[in-house]
Amino acid sequence: MGLFDFLKKKEQPAETKKSKVLLAMPMFNNGETIEIDKVVDYLKSNWDTIPSDINGEGETVSFLIDGELIVLATLPAQIPFGDIQGTAEYAYNWPTAEKDLENHNSHIIVTVMSSQKSEVDRFCILTKVLSSIVATTNCIGVYHGSQSLLIPREQYLHSAKALKTNQIPIDLWIYIGLRNGEKGNNAYTYGLTAFDKLEMEFINTELELEDMFSFLSNICAYVINSNIIFKSHISSQTCKTA
Image (spheres, rainbow, N blue to C red):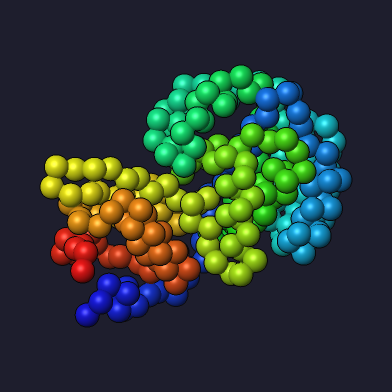
């Protein structure tokens, strides 16, 4: 029985419960903030999404998307650089992150407030709002601390396009750690708990790190999209190349 056959047996219906607040932070070098009209226009033209009940201006703006309350708060200050340094250490997707961000001087806290919607729906909304901010400003990149992610501007815009074909932009939602070991390569996830899933880890595989990234990305997308629930920790045989 293959891995995906096993996962299908664990597929569960989605439960209705109140979700947690989602936070992410676009960062800027020049004290920049958003022009809400441009963000709204981009949401409409690029995502076919129409915000409603827009309130506020300047440093704090709120609006609704599909009943979800979104709050944008601009702070004319750095994100505590210790937080960024800790994440940048593992940001292999952005090797120059620490240097690129050392002089950033403003950021926006993008919040999707708690609700009854599924985490997938809410992460989709967060991604659309963030990509709209990135596309209409000189944003350097996005810090998603709860997911241990630092994502540079171009990667964010490119990966967000996956939503247009109903795919999950895993690299914007889940951190996949990769490391060499004495007996093989290792890979692990950080961020699946945001979707009420167990984190996953592959140890001492013979797959190349790039192949492990693709393999684990595909599994994560399937687990999130199909609402797979693992009842307990499971182990699998070591992955080997053909």
